[in-house]
Length: 337
Image: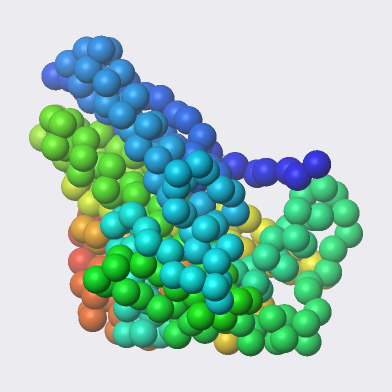
């Protein structure tokens, strides 16, 4: 039986009581993690309306971005993969936009966050499942991975703007937009909630956090997990109206020969990236924050800083030696514990 490990909180939401509005919270399962909504509203009925809408929207986008399951009437990532090498699939505008942006960012950055790496990632997921079932595991055979890597190429994605369609030109190509879709979705839903009238709250989608407004004229405090003890916060950030996305080696991993093998696979080595323990990206755009939290997890500090200047994001990096680096724009609003 397949075992799932859900990360309840990758970021700690340190939200206190409100003098003007009441705090209400709910959580539900979507995108293979727990989604938590904390909101400050005038009463429970108002909160219930926001909570119901949030859960409905996450369900909708989970089905749209799912690479492994089909849903009636939904042309999702799985449908694109099923038709690889056969035909183009006309898709929803949101799915088209996510794939388009992922391809453009890949071409214009360090080319680490590759959404066509799926054939390789699936091999590591199989190892993860055996590890979760308490079986002895080893890393996938490298020669086998190199053979599968022949199907990995962002140029296999053919975009048709006019038709709003996606075509994978190689039959062995597969997409997985998990490294961009959750950030895009969480940001999108947060903006929809603001349009509906929500002025204060936080959505935490398993490490993809969107802060909505302030907490009665004060900034929220968001805690970044300690990679060596994820149940405690290592760094606190005071902020408002922003996206905060963390990629860490403690989220999903297995151990081989005493080494923690995380779930982020470097497309150049076809092995788990071991250069950092945790990378947090802060930006106004959820997709940008999500994309670069994955990409920068595989990069050294010099390359991270160059990307931060190019794409105007802030960052917090905890490297493999536990050195903490905080970008200049965050130094006045962060506290290391």
